[in-house]
Image (tube, rainbow, N blue to C red; front, top):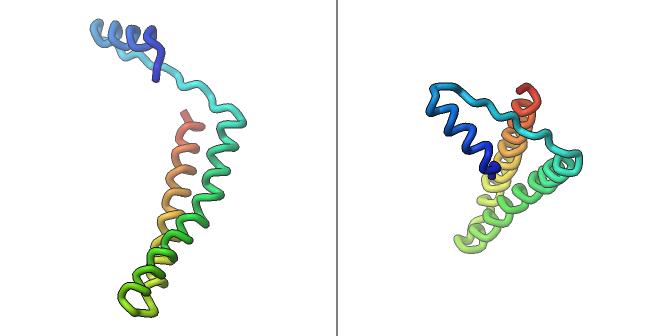
Length: 95
């Protein structure tokens, strides 16, 4: 949430036809550490969630192979989220 003076500056800039650019504050070390720690938990958690869903479906349908595609799907989902976060962080650092 932005402070009210930034909203009023943006509104005043739009009313006059100007573009108002507001710089984002830099993230602190603890905020970055928390984000990357959450990524470290995200990869194994998404892999385990995919495996668990596949295992439960195997038990429900009496099969023995559904855990494999769900394990792969969970791993891919974790890596996709990892790449999204890295791309967002590199975009934030470039600007």
